Length: 213
Ligand SMILES: CC(C)(COP(=O)(O)OP(=O)(O)OC[C@H]1O[C@@H](n2cnc3c(N)ncnc32)[C@H](O)[C@@H]1OP(=O)(O)O)[C@@H](O)C(=O)NCCC(=O)NCCS
Image 1 (cartoon, rainbow, N blue to C red):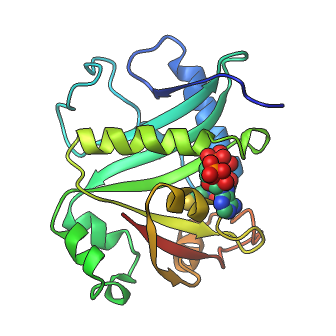
Image 2 (cartoon, rainbow, N blue to C red):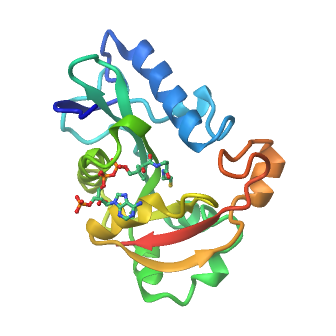
């Protein structure tokens, strides 16, 4: 069924329907990225504070935000995006021990010197895919990151063992390029934290494509 009309908004911000939307967002992220990939506690760090001024800069850093797309007809959350502005130390750490593989890349060197916007996770509900929902959500997320100081962007795009990199084409259409592929990127992390990859049905054997802009 096509999604004729959707609304993009930040999760939280004191909305009365926040609790329900948080639960729907958590379920969507866990279905798409694996049970245990993100906990409710971790998601709550991305929820906008109740007193946030619309469009104003956040009072405290780091800036972490969940943006969701809601189907106007049903009020269901049909897509979720987690974004974050990171500084050099967090930027390096996010590559999970693989940073040396990228150190020499000129774009990486540029990003390391500035606050950088991290496209952390995105899931669009299967029935809503292929209709530009991810593109709209990412455009809104990148704007929010830029508003909070990001001078570049990166993403560790999941290369699903079965479906390939679904996010890569979307990011390429938004001006990102691939710096390199890193094999079995989350393997140690998925063993240590005990989460199951939906494509591997066990510890994650998937690669990531390091996408930069
Ligand atoms: C990746 C994902 C979020 C894309 O959502 P989507 O709403 O279907 O994407 P869009 O419809 O906004 O696509 C935007 C553009 O990217 C292109 N695109 C989408 N999927 C693509 C793919 N698999 N390969 C190449 N290009 C693709 C579309 O053609 C579109 O370009 P166009 O507007 O010029 O036609 C969705 O497939 C998903 O949730 N996948 C599972 C979870 C996942 O892999 N998340 C990323 C984890 S890092």
